[in-house]
Image (cartoon, rainbow, N blue to C red; front, side, top):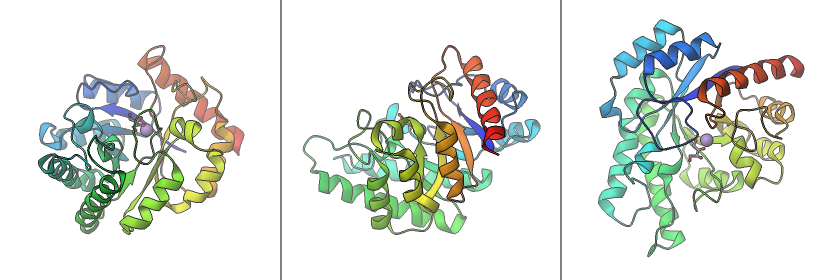
Length: 272
Ligand code: LER
Ligand code: MN
């Protein structure tokens, strides 16, 4: 099992990003605890030195399996279905600007909250059309670079567009690009899916990336999700990507990260 943890390259408001602050110090700690990779939350690639990030990752023997883009929504309000065409265009261009970074790091680009919500004055149909068009444009731009995009179904309390796997699969059908798939997150699935295992089976090889947090969004092992059963279903689909920890820094970030890896490594032995 390849394990990663979410790491923000900038200060961020998003609470489930456990590691904020000094990049190299955090990467050193994460490598020391035995993680294989870090998922980088990058608000704007223009503001980060990718060569430096790459050098630090190499120094500590870590990979970056995925790049999170949601801070562009959280901090700047960019999204695909905004009624303002300039904001829609900026959201698309922002995602495209991640493509060279993702290609260089061999990372999946995550489309989380950046896909937006249905804003006042915009019909659901119109919002979905804009989301589909944006994803088609971004997927087409990413394909020649060999880069994949993964949309994350997010629970109803955080977004009004694409809350569950069935909606994610319908969107994949509409976008119609091989390099566009899903990121499944156990925290959101625990709220939205009747059966996480069944939804994972349905998503099958459209699963490009995977987030773990327990039912309370603490580290795996702190709540009541049956991770043996969920991860068995995931690996049965043939998934060979990373399991990426995205949970609250509770009781604190270091304790949570260490508890997560201890729990998941032990579970890995029990699954064999
Ligand atoms: C991001 O990966 C996520 O899971 C969302 O809850 C962001 O708010
Ligand atoms: Mn997530």
